[in-house]
Image (cartoon, rainbow, N blue to C red):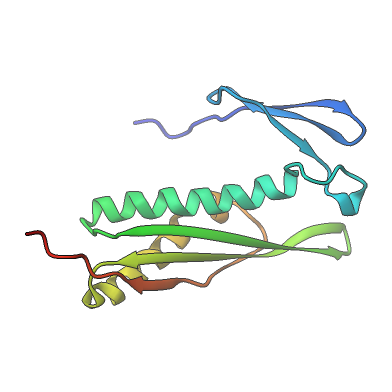
Length: 150
């Protein structure tokens, strides 16, 4: 049984406050910059966005794994994440990350179970569990009835 995994990314400065980042498992590099409010280039990914995107992506993949193991079927899932960056005693840091999943299910009778699985995904997501900042979950569940198959 493997008790650890290693993931490697590499950032390379290109000019100004910008660069590229790549990972051993990804074919394409991503351009990034410091945020415009920190004298970076507008329109590019920022390390701050990478962190918050990692929370959202981890939440989605964790929920999918939990739903599969629980044999829970759903119609769709989107999750946005919002990070609050605040200046404290040691400088800027994320003080809170809010995850806002929107889960669509086929039957209203599955609503409570869906909420429990969303909450379990938030507790189980390894990226958000690794953060020092507070992580909040604000789910939305909608019901979409499936048309009967003729």
